[in-house]
Length: 224
Image 1 (cartoon, rainbow, N blue to C red):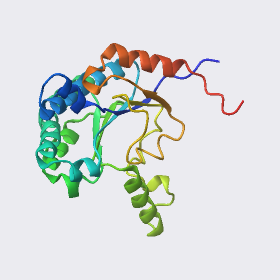
Image 2 (cartoon, rainbow, N blue to C red):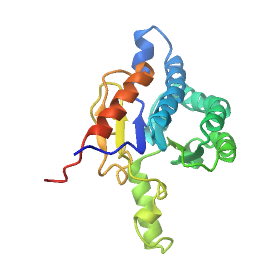
Image 3 (spheres, rainbow, N blue to C red):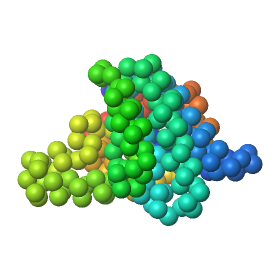
Image 4 (cartoon, rainbow, N blue to C red):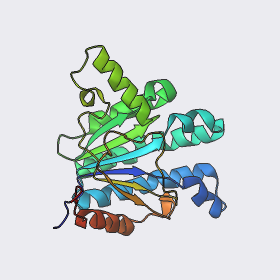
């Protein structure tokens, strides 16, 4: 029995700081290299048949517990991407754009660029999804509140990511085989997991393609 192609790829791009330090670069340069690597990853994912490419760029802890200078670098690198590369990528791939997380509260300076990216998006099946100021436990708490208050008719319908398909492959770079901040707890229930040794800026399109092909060729047994 063969597997099914990956429709929804989710990425935890870990290791930007370690990549930079190993090259005597600043942490900010590591984050800029990391966001640049997102471009090629999304292009390769779409070329391999992925329809939804989700990437996480910061948890609430990243934005509140790290040094202010680094937080400015994390947010600044993302804002530069949103204002330039993201717009070009959306045109090139004819994708829609979404962003989820506690953005209003934790990094409101990104809102104009996020709104512009949403307006620049297209109506085709491809989607680029940003998670920023995101913790999956916050998402579940928000969904539970929406359900209790009668604003939705099921817990899933109250999720920030309610209209996304379930994740087929969750890929984490940086030689760290664990999840963080309740990452997409509802959406990864059936996901395949890939943990890469390479820090995120060193993850090449060829390596990403290999992981997509491996996941697509793995048949699910469902206890059989």
